[in-house]
Amino acid sequence: MGKRTRTPAAAPQRRELPDFTKLPARVPPEALVTTQPASEAPDPQGGRDTETEFVLRNAGF
Image (spheres, rainbow, N blue to C red):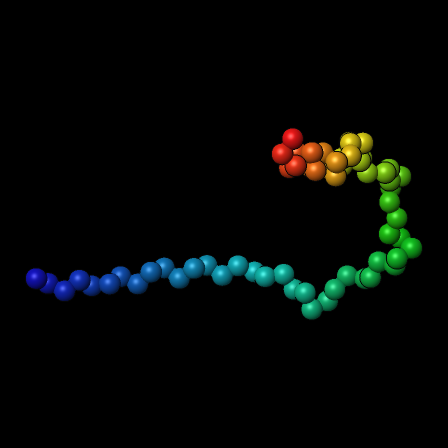
């Protein structure tokens, strides 16, 4: 049988990488403000007593 000849794979195209040697100007902390007022997070337990529910569920009642 004859030997197989390998065809060289095409080289992947190199893409231009961004230049990060010069960074943009720093943002002062005074400029970092929210655009809308924040509200309280909702109660994850929904007002239930989850500790008592856990005990009752696992106590064998």
